[in-house]
Image 1 (cartoon, helix red, strand yellow):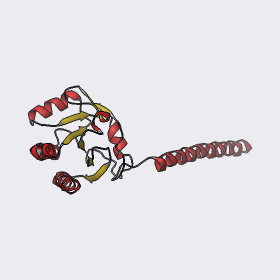
Image 2 (tube, one colour; image 1 turned 30 degrees about the vertical axis):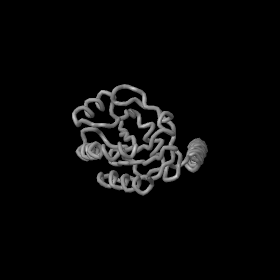
Image 3 (tube, helix red, strand yellow; image 1 turned 90 degrees about the vertical axis):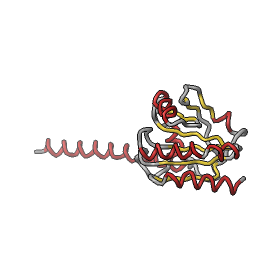
Image 4 (cartoon, one colour; image 1 turned 180 degrees about the horizontal axis):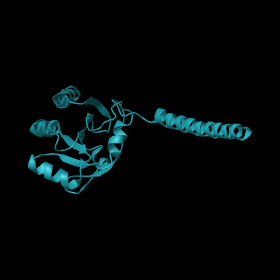
Length: 188
């Protein structure tokens, strides 16, 4: 009988120790979370590099200081709302060119898949391949949407690298383009 009590105490002690480790991990991750800079209106856009649909490297350092930019994150290429969204950005080409704005779409498809998709829909902007969602995580780190396949985010960035507008939604694709254009008309 004493043996069982000792085993229970030992197990309880081990359990308490594991719980302490878990609490420390939670505190550490919460500290990291609170110290992360949220990318929102007024934030500086982070520098990153990703391959475009042609396999060329897109480097944010080349854009900041040279052009205004719209970055939009969308779901898979074969998603109906994604097709509508990218085609709507494509159809606004003249506005974006006249306003000297570079449009860039980002998803987690491969370079080859983005090339095929871009060709199929005659897209006139770059599609960047973020296979592991590293850049999306950078932009969406503090979002409440856990399922990226449903979240669509658009970031309007001025030529100095400041985010001047953010749109996040799951299904309001027109809102992303309309609000971005309205913001750009107001700003410039």
